[in-house]
View 1: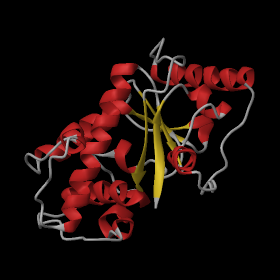
View 2: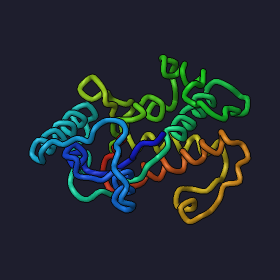
View 3: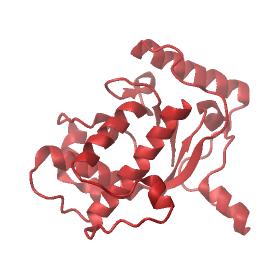
Length: 224
């Protein structure tokens, strides 16, 4: 299964002013559209802007950061991404904290016992990676220590800066492999282990998304 990951003004997301991967595919092929997952938000622009401003003010008050990010402008990034890759990176992160043995999981990463222990409350050095809903929520391009539950309940708001640091720490322990741009240009990764192939793919993609978010000062939106 997949979800869409966008880097965009939050108000545009809540107003439904964007296209998903399946919408773009439908338009290019003429095939009927069938959206899977949550319905696309369709607030009017004024209400969407007010909601987005409220989120930014709420986060600024809790982090002490003012003028936290832009909520205007164009969509900077919009691609589909596999749940399997996200789960693989999370499982790998949890594994590195609890075991010195090689990572040997090849599928069903979300069922990893190490990952389940962290989700259940075991402390982790990767909170922004692991403690985030799979198919909803945001990462914003500012630096704060722990993920926040928006207004005390889902969705989760994470720090794109901290997620990028967590991913960089994971990558250091793996060694060199193609980043997102190199992969887009056709460079192949010769990783023989299918589980680690998912991990590398996930780290490369998510790191690029975080970097783009910080550079554009726009939030990352999980849409699934």
